[in-house]
Length: 201
Image (tube, rainbow, N blue to C red; front, side, top):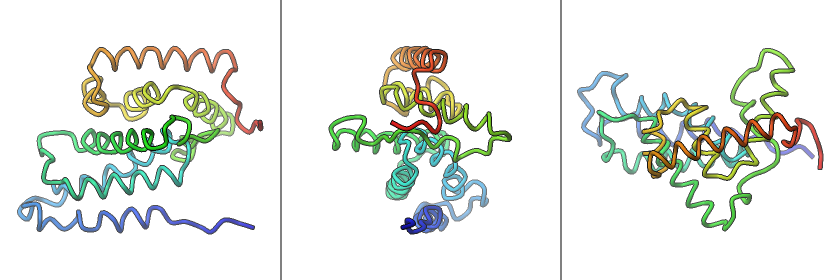
């Protein structure tokens, strides 16, 4: 029996509809592209991609993004216009994820084999798609604290400083986690230790 079709994007855009209206946030005089709601909308694709790569479960990722957007709306008055909206939203999403990990008691509780990075992009060839899935499977084997830094810097293009702000870790810790995470990824990919795309246990 087929699973019922879900429409996560519809749920997400319904959640942020209130963000588009600037009446509560003193943005009535701002151009459309400068309004906080518009900036949040522009970051949804980044949030979904990061969450999917982090959780390796598309439905759970959309739920996490939904929670992140809801929290962001509630705390929009704390955002500083001079700061990075992406970094601010990723900080909220990261903290929600950490809380979920603590609630579940172990990192693997929110992960599934395989990955969803390839679902957020459109590889031009099958070989590229398989390579992307292998990389996603290797990422799934990294400790959560390494995986988040690798994704923030490598996937989302954040600076070391912004990644440190998102994770709440010292800059040197972020750099160390990134170096170790990249080294472990290279080992997993080169040695074939990561589960191959389409493989079954």
